[in-house]
Image (cartoon, rainbow, N blue to C red; front, top):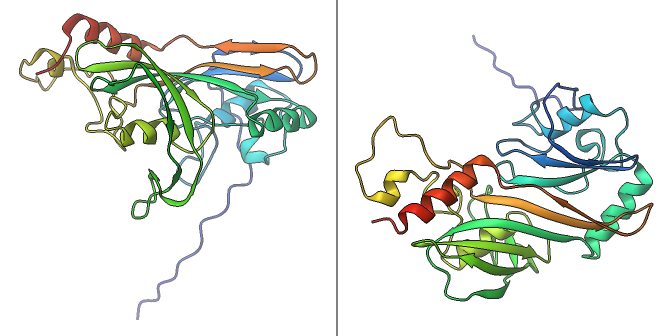
Length: 265
């Protein structure tokens, strides 16, 4: 006789410190601005218990706000795993509440750099489409999905190299996957967005029309989306602060190739 049983997975209680390098843009007694690399999850979850930004923060800083609990210590907003760029971290609980209020009241200004498939027709526009959970795929969000909430993204086209559009995005709301879902809805998905786009990576051979070689390295293998700027009101000292992160190597490499080769075949 064989007896089988199963036990629930133990809940995560905290995020152990890990010596993971951080690119710190700004730091004072109350806040820290970090340039998050791609392929880094912001906080631990069932599938990502280590190697997260919170694990790195726990190693580098003695005190972090605990308003959101130990698994999200210091975290007041988030970026997708493969979205790079500026993320704000808070050291003090009172300051955390003030920063959170600025996000809730939409007093925080955010700018993203995105590279989209195809040539956007308008030079600028407001995308005003509600976003909710996808009705069939729990990993995805969708326009008009379950419990959809207002979502607004303003964009400006910076350039159109070949059959692509380089876009500055200014989200007015902060829904999950908002920019990615909005441009998917316009039928101009973010380049190399495996979840919402037509492909999960882009090669130089896709631009030149030559045959793809097995050893060819991709220009980019994650969504071409970067949180470029974040502006807040300093919660203690007052005055506006803007944090900026330069585009990472893979996006710069992608832009160089698009400008050189133009449209793909």
